[in-house]
Image (cartoon, rainbow, N blue to C red):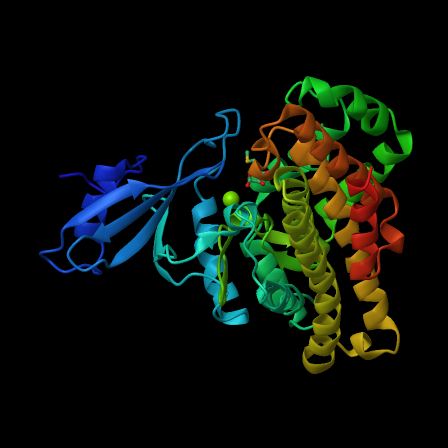
Length: 406
Ligand code: SR1
Ligand code: MG
């Protein structure tokens, strides 16, 4: 019998079954439990435990002491507490858009949550060219509720500062500061890019002084603007989806930062799907149809976010000065600038840096993959440098169309 109550250790599949039997009051005494480790993220272990008698299932997610992607990243298993607590909070702010949490265990640094196996990871679904007409509506409700309702516009300022304290997340923030804002923009040894893309990166990214300056400004904005309680890693691998349901998972990077960080991540990851579609769908009609669907989704995410944000502001703002004419437009405008910038940063870092996305790495034909990478890099650079002009969904579509046609 393993002891799960006094000392942390990383579990294997057998341990997870024993944990479910002895530490949880979820399954029947005569349950026939099986377990598979299904995690494919960069950091954690995800165990799906099923009672083969009746199909009842749960997820046990455990934080390891180092990242799976590389043991260079020593990240405190306390991130599991952050994840459990923020999932509860997001469940209250945006009901129905996150998995239910059943338990958090501070000894084993694991949490137990609803199994969403009837959903699919959105990145995979988009690579299979599936469409989700409700996604833009769902994700914008999730973002407006979690971002605006945790800001000083709506919250009592002392209570908000308590949340800032509770969700201080220095190690995971450092990963983002390094991998998103710093390393991709110089010839850092930890970068991981194709030889065929290197010359383009050298000329267009690393040799551009203006771009370097803008990334410096943005890095300090990320580190110092405690605007909203972010998800912090809202890419399409952090979203479970099916036709009528969207669930946001994996908020372990959560902290108080600029609201546009989450919105920009969603947009950039839709653009990876767009680049994937352009270079993997051979039939012209199907390719155009799917790219148009993604363009519409990108447009809707931006435009619905704006509309819902302004409406929620009118309904929920409590801060006196927030009601001064013009302030809500000024505030939204700064989120839109950050959104465009983060779209660009994420597009660049997933091509140049250490953490890639399958949408691009799965493109088998090397010359097509290089073209997809150049599309992302060129669009990314434009979003960073021209962030002041990206005010509407259509502005994003214009940029990606321009580079998709080259
Ligand atoms: C060391 S972690 C690498 C990346 O995976 C996570 O999902 C974040 O996006 C992070 O940047
Ligand atoms: Mg993750």
